[in-house]
Amino acid sequence: FSAMEEGGGPANVAPGEIPAEKKKMVCIVVIGMAGTGKTTLMGGLHKYLTEQGKVVYTVNLDPAVLADGVTYPVNIDIRDTVKYKEVMKHFQLGPNGAIMTSLNLFATRFDQVLQLLEQRCDSVDYCLIDTPGQIEVFNWSASGALICEALSVSYPTLVTYIVDTPRSARTVTFMSNMMYACSILYKYKLPFIVAFNKIDVLSHEFAVEWMTDYEAFASAARQETTYISTLATSMALAMEEFYNNIRHVGISAVTGAGFKDFEVKVAEAVEEFRTTYLPYLKEQAAAVLERRKEFERRRKEELKRSLDAAAKDPDREEYDSLSKLFADMKGVD
Image (tube, rainbow, N blue to C red; front, side, top):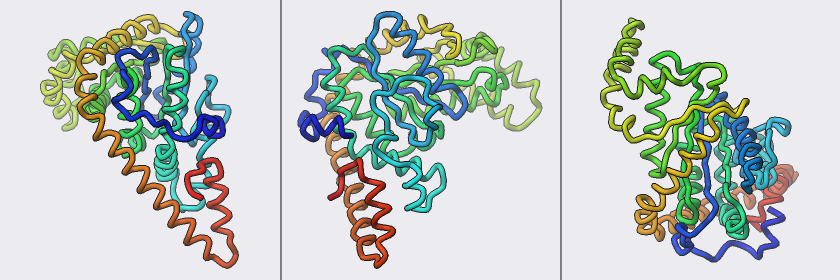
């Protein structure tokens, strides 16, 4: 965060004090399972919106993505702050555990991200936020919730859930995706868009039909004579209210098909944010700030204890490893 340090430390504006209804910049958090095309979509959207004359700011929250795996220019990159391989080595974690720990470390400095966004919010139209491919790492971690809360009390924020359309052609897989989408919607309590990606491979019309016509879904499910297909048919009835109120759009991250429709859905979601979600978020602003401060305090205490313990090591190898790990974070002296 060397660029952020020039701003003079953490932003001193508490969440909720920034009138989000007057902000120009819209934050779009892109969530989806591995292989659904999130990063490719980020690149496609960046290109499309830029060609439309929009100013786009991007944030990468995936610490494990390869250097050549990012297909869009990144303004804020978690990889510049937290060294994923060092986290894995020091804490003896597997890939998912290291990603979650890296995200937690990054979240302790998210006030500086907010400060950077605040400096640019009047000139930027969209802030696109790419999340880890391991969806559970972001969606069910404390850091994921805190990051979304911090954004939503400062800027119009919405969540886009990416669905791999060809892989959802089976009723069971489709229902699994819809259940996950529903859980994300109720967890984050933000305007929500389901984006059926890869429509250049398979049209999403079947998915729209299944969402609007229970009998069509039930008929397709009956072709699979398994217990899970029977369960999916039963769940479809429970999901009817969700289907009736959810925004959905078909897109192709590769060809750009559906991007115009997606932009229309985003505009609808922003209007919903201002009229429906913002009053609730304002009421929760103080609690959001307190949760974030407590999260940062606990994470920094853990880092300090790790450094203190490593400093007592005679060969100092572990201490040197930790020092290298947090060299860019400046969160622990």
